[in-house]
Image (cartoon, rainbow, N blue to C red; front, side, top):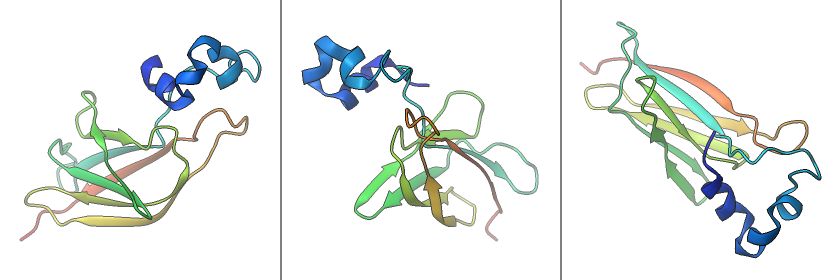
Length: 128
């Protein structure tokens, strides 16, 4: 869940005085939360220890986003807030073999209010 300020950016400045009508709150029953399109947990494949220094890049066409590392739990990353689409995810970390995942589909919830968050666990192996 994200803050209301991110929702204000999504809905646009012309909606500031009419958030309930413009964004559908009350009308469609949508909450004011901003949901991540993807949550990823990254860990060492052998020890299962979380990897906090990974760089996760999500791309779709000309769009690219570096996923945000969450403070808790260790090894958790998140991104693509309220952005449905079909993505490629690249996971890199020093001393580890990089991994790429294609065709990750982030859809919408049944009510159309938010993205349906995709959760992935990525286990990286040490490079030799």
